[in-house]
Image 1 (cartoon, rainbow, N blue to C red):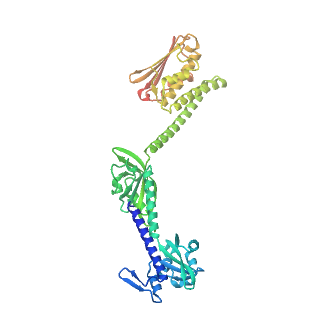
Image 2: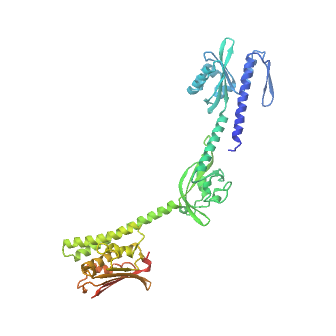
Image 3: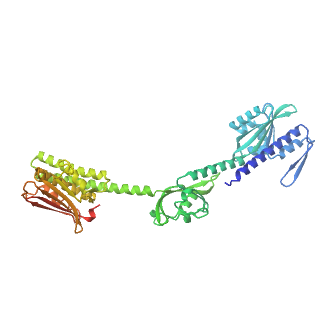
Length: 489
């Protein structure tokens, strides 16, 4: 609505009030004999009424374009002009047969009755809603005392102000609508029946440079509906809304300056009085971050499912192998429990780092901590800040657990003089991790390969080109582990 319209409405309202006051003053002058004749201007010609005749006053009342009625002191209808009959959708005979208050409806009748009581000696006005021909209308009712030849009564005038009220309501609705659009965080666009943009808020700026006003919706927002296989366009969305059907939550992408955004669209028809559709409103929400989060969550759920399956398989394998090498149930319980603890410790470290991999240093310290103080002279660690991916971290965690367990039971950590050296360095495109023990008991090659030795030897064999080599040197065990560069995080 243009900025000048409020001023125009105020001027129109003032004109209506002036005309009403003039009409009432004219009626008063006629009643009191101050006027001999009147000139009533018509659409094509003026009509002159001489007020000396018997029907002159009635003829003048019929020429008025506002509804008028005269009531006696008991509220009985004495006279109603044609304008009032037309306003109420009744003829004069129907009004004469029934009380005017019955014709007004309960709510309006109470308001008019109260207005008449207030007008005892004074003129009073009030706006009310009436059941008029074709629906409800808004009228300004004015009541004023009326001197009759046989007593006193009341003069009522009914001025139809429906157009002014509806215009004011439309202006207020438009103002509120513009305020809502301006305050919305989402892009809001209004299109006319031709699909051209008539209004847009500042939320469209991330999707379009410059003004969108006057442009076809498809031109301003070149949307790609991936799920429609190219069969749907933005104009189709507008067409559905203009046909009267609201559309909610349609996924699409929109590319601007080389950047593609995920957007969520909704569209709904805009209706005028009488249910006539004059346009539609479209909202465009940027859901790029939300969709990225959903994809990450889906990926994490899939990864978690994969890891759970792998972990259960690994636990079953550890249980089977541990049973095969256990002396008795107590031995199985101890060995199996410690291996599960090692597996759990690695999983805990991975979870704390959101499964982004672990460094060799973190894995080694987690296994050595129960037996050797970090920084002890008995353990020398070099180059172990290498980060490995989760699958390799789980395998290495179990291998380090077996190496530490063997060192505590039979190797370098079983004596006070034993030492362990752990170093990692690049070699031939691989990362070589060397575990070397010295100063412990003399090493003897085991006659039988237990599960611990099997796990050490084969633990990395399931992960690409990775491998493990174990050398039972008399002066101390040496284990070389080779991790492919692809597994380094």
